[in-house]
Each structure stands twice: as structure tokens, then as C-alpha cells.
Length: 486
Image 1 (cartoon, rainbow, N blue to C red):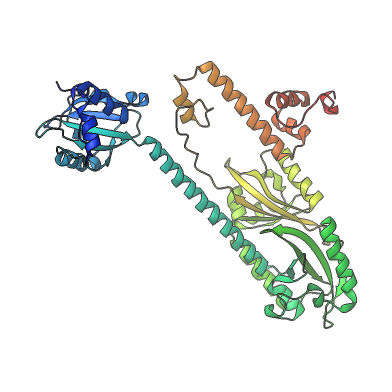
Image 2: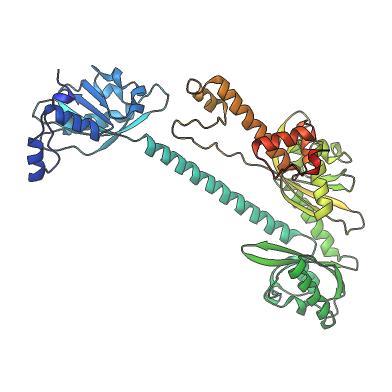
């Protein structure tokens, strides 16, 4: 039987005289070794298309069932869509030239097809065919990861575009007059319709103007002090200033924020007189929009009792009507535990607003949804209250782990794959350590590094939490920490 080690050296496509001379120096065994060494997979196929010999150049190909191909038609070892390519490779094989490369897929015992790129040559007319193959599994894995990365980028882009649209919608529909001003130049960059009605000016006459020109000249010094304090400390006290043109006094509240590499000021103008009738009508329109929003919206009083909630929030809590949740505490459904909700309301009282707070919503009938909460406190109002938007967190596809390393499992499927390669004792020990570390990090992140609250959330004593933090290298602990000896 003809084998790879007994073949003469094949002639490459368009051989040069130097290559022809070098090929003449090789005997059959040397030629076979050269083919096996320069390819990931080599086959010898007779003129009937039957595989007579195989040679794997990589050790990780031995578990793909290649040895079972001997004596079978080459075309029967590939998937259905690859059969025409095998026919072409056999038909085009001729002396003195190599066929062009074609990619085919072989069914594999692992459940994932084995991609191989083949080229063929026939050293002698009507003689056996030499098949040279290149393993494409690494390239296929990179292609899958590239496709998943592209999908993740597209999801992030859609999320950012949705957030921008939501911001624009709320900004335009808000019944409170709001202006966005550049912190360095004091030039107005954005204005909502409520502010245009209050100032009595169209948008084109406000954008680009100095914000101080919108007020009476006697308030210039107070406004300069307000902007200077914002630039230095990031905070400023509310002030009352008359608008230009005798349009009445307003309360000016300013907040500093950064976005797109620039620092801006959010100016909120609250009139000291009853609102105009059209603003009341606009407010009703805004409430109707909020009720139809696809994200949860809820308002509570200072005691965390729900005052109003939209339909999306009712869906998250598995209720049919707003009356079923009105008057009940928000933390009945919001938060993974009592400490989670307490941390959220504590940050609201301390800072006035919260963004990107990751938590969970518990439905009335046992559902659990990972959510992201943004909240604001209106402590300056006659009746202090809190407003919340609740957005479901998108579920991302798990990343593909190529190769056969000993990374700790992230799912049941990956843990099953490690069985037989890692001892059960080591696998259980390392997985337990990983879960403990992830739980501690999550608890510290939820409680904003409040270690006493994190210990309570995890059901540990404070000393037990510190011992595990030291073991896993979490946080900044030393022997002088007073809580270690408490």
C-alpha cells in the first residue's frame, strides 16, 4: 500500500530550476517527512477517492477521529455542503501543478465541525493523489470572536443612541425651564421649550449668547460669583435673579457636569409666580409620555412610599394597576436585599442624584430582573420626593474561550469541559474561591465599599469578611485598621 513516507517529492506549482534540482535530491521517505512537517494534515487518496493513509502534523488533531477515515471515501468524511469542493479537488488534481485551496468542514466527535483548507496534487498520471491540509480552527475562533465583538459594539451603540434620544425627549418635554451653558465661556448651548416660553425668545436668539445677558444687568455680579464657585468647587448656592425685559424673578439652580470632553452647567429656572396655563397643559402631555415610556418610572415621597408609577414599572413588579402599588414602599420590589435599597436612598439624600445604580427588581410572583436605576431628589420642593427611572440591563453573550487552558469555569458547560483535565478536588476548590471573591466584590460595589453593610448582606461577621478580603487581596487592609480589632 502506498504511504506518505514512500512517495517521491511532488512538483510544486510552476517549479523553478533550483527547486527541481533540490527535489531530485530527496528520496521517498524524505519527501513524505517534508509533506507531513509542512502541513497540519496530509492524506493519500487513490484514483477511486478512497483514503489510503493519513498523517496529522499537530497533536491536537488526533482526537478528531482522523484515524477512522482510513478505507473510506474522502467525500464521505465531510459535511454535505463541502462535497462539491471534494469533487473539484479530486477532478482538478494533475501532474506538475497544485489545485487552488478550498475550505471544507469535517464532522467532529466534539460536536463542532473541523475546518480544514485543502490543496491536492497528483505526482503521476492515474496515480494516487496527495492531499495537503491546513487547520483553520484558530482562524474560525478569531472570526467568531470578531463577529461577537461587532455585535457587542452595535448593542452598545444602540444603547447610547437610545440614551441620547431619551435624554433629548425628557429635555424637550420637561415642564421645568432648563438651559445648558458652557462652563468656560458662559455661552448657552441648549435650551428647552419651557425655557424659551419663560424668556420670551426663540431658540436662535438664545443659543450662543452669554447666559448673563438673559438676566437683568443688576444680577451680573451674583451670576459671575455663581459660575466662579461652580468652576472651583463644583457647587453653587441657588440665587434669585430678575430676568431681562422685566419678565419677573426666577430662582436659579446650577449643577456642573462633564460630557464629551467639556464641562457644562445645567441651569434650572423656577418662576416665583404661578405657572402659565399652557405650562399646565404641557405638564399633562409630559405625564402622558412618561406613562407610555418603555422604561420604568416611579415617584416616591421622602418615606419611600410610591406616589405614582408608569406602566413599564407595573410590568416589572407584575401588577395590573397603579392603585396596587400606590402608597407601598418602593424597596418592597427594588433591591437584592434591604441593604441594597438603603444604600440607594442614602446616596440620594447625600448627593441629590444617582446614576447607573445596578440592582434587581423582584416581581410580585417571583420574577427577578437585573436593572439599572437613575434617580434624583427634589429636596428643594415644598413636598420632598424622589424620582426613579428603572431600565432592564441587557444580557450579553458569554465570551468564547479558545484553546484548552485551565481557566476557571464561568458556566456549567465550561465546567463540564474541564472534567477529565482537572481533578474534581481542584476544580471544586478553585470554583468555590472564585465564587466567594466575586460575591465579596459585588457586595462591596453595591454598598459603595461600606464593609459593615457588605458583611451583613453576605451573612458574615465583620471579622470573617476582613479575613476573606485579606485572603483574596481585595481592598486595602493592614494590621492597623481599627475595624479589624472591633
